[in-house]
Image (cartoon, rainbow, N blue to C red; front, side, top):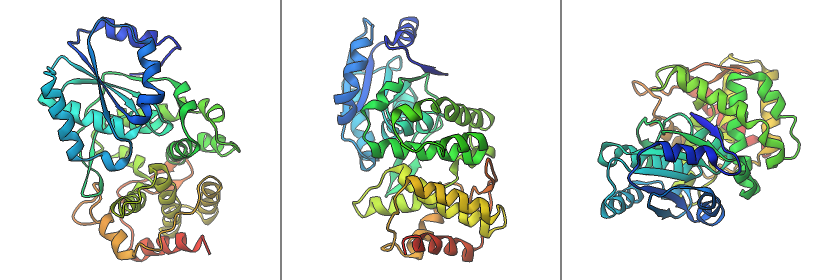
Length: 347
């Protein structure tokens, strides 16, 4: 269940009072510790003891070493199976917190309080948890629903512009795969700020939630949520391996440009639709320089994508603005053409 919090966090306090938790562990990074934790603690009403677990910010922390440290801390603090983990942060925190919670003692309860736009609209919703492995995104993880998701939109006011823009990519994706009207509303936004975006968050959350409810374990329609992620994750992984991480939404935006053009090459959408998508994404997102990445290095990562079967790359590609196919196997020639198309956008 997703709940929009009042300023006094009354819904969260009711939740805590109605449940029988033994102790609370709040997972944060240094940014949410500074900007968001004081708001949570200033409004949280409970007699339960709580501990703060802090990790460094950044995708590079979403690994087995960090997970192991958190498991060890929970063990040292004698966390039992009636403990509650509160994940207060962006996608890294909700992915990581959900993963350590769903595996520690075979599962303790957790809730997500997302603090970034990306996490509010996408990462915290859907019950996917995970960590990266050898720079492969989300290679190890579980399907585990949080007990609740609590959204406090005012946390968006603490975000730098790049973080807002990163989350906006997932909102645009939701419109492209499932709701043309949502896409058309979003591209009317000329200045990306919390005030302009906040009225559209509920629609994006509803789209994600609806898809997940139809296909929790990603057997079919949930795969459409991966539009832009097949190529995007490959580039994100390569940047991470070079010690130059980029924001997830930046990678997804680049991936959506490539995969929109790929959908056109595969005769799934018209040239006009592909050009409309690319032009609007370029309005919001700067060009990512991928000149250091060879076609071979990108396709090597594509071949290890989680959606693949029988060593064949499965894409989720648009069949129109507002609709999406999945398990689409493209020609190698067209995949390379889509990468070359992106490289030439900077000419």
